[in-house]
Length: 414
Image (cartoon, rainbow, N blue to C red; front, top):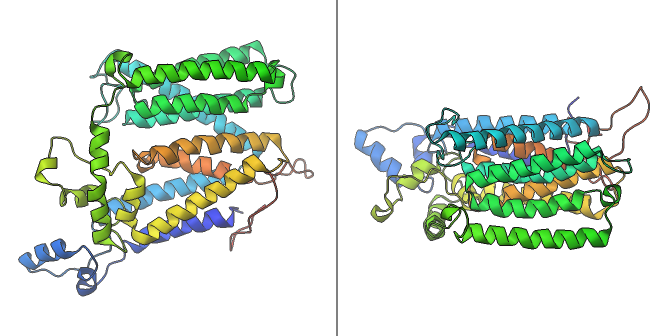
């Protein structure tokens, strides 16, 4: 029987229902009465047609987005069914995929911009992208991988006095691999996230098993952090890497777009334009001064694109999701855990999710299928795993802290 927690389940079902609502055909008179349909009505009047229309102004793209959302929901449900050992296996598999993606990114840069190792027609051919199309997304992905290195090492030495030399060597090699791959992305966000990820990974390390005193650990961490900050500053200011990490002015242009994006939000309230419609809608607002060979396929600001495409209901779902995340993080970090294994998994997932939340203010990682599935899996990691029976008997430890969720109607929750 499928088991998911009620708060997260309600948010998922609300999102899916909202996208389905945007696809329901409406009579022409009702459809044209919705805010923001004046231009579409004028065009249809010119050709003498009065078809039914959905809330979404780009129904086929909304249908594509619905399919992606269902894939992410399936990933959430599957991950939520796993017990603690199953989640350990899943996180280890994700870490392995990150290693492959990092190796691919380095190979892409080494082979040049025309390398067949780039899998997408539209991509950053001057940088490492791994299995993604966007270099920034790889930088985010591998920054999360740095956190998972700390989790993996802690998991491997759990219950032991000291880690094996091979495990320490493997963790060090993978860390250097990830840092090298992030360097190939020339992603400013990736560089800053990598620095933060090193701090997050440090908090997961089993200092006692490593034979490191707390004072020595914090002194060493402080020194490494200072070095890391210096390196990142030199990268961002163009002193290192030939200016590849330097600011190009695109950040200012995105900030200047905010008033125009807010205007689109206002024009289409309260129902929005339909998920997946931003590209088409923005073209009707783009000024002559803003025309260029490139195009703005996404708003590069999820917190403005959601109200544009989903309207007020989308904002409500976003707020509910952030509250759910904050509630889960509070439980993971502030409540005495009943299982260290589960607590480590949840802490690692909570840290990695922060990168996605922050990055979404200046990019669109969750608009890609792979990242959406990855994010959904991380969210499932924050929920208590299903207690499994061993040989018809005992249960493994529950998630950190007291049970705070109820059963989803029609489903069971353990």
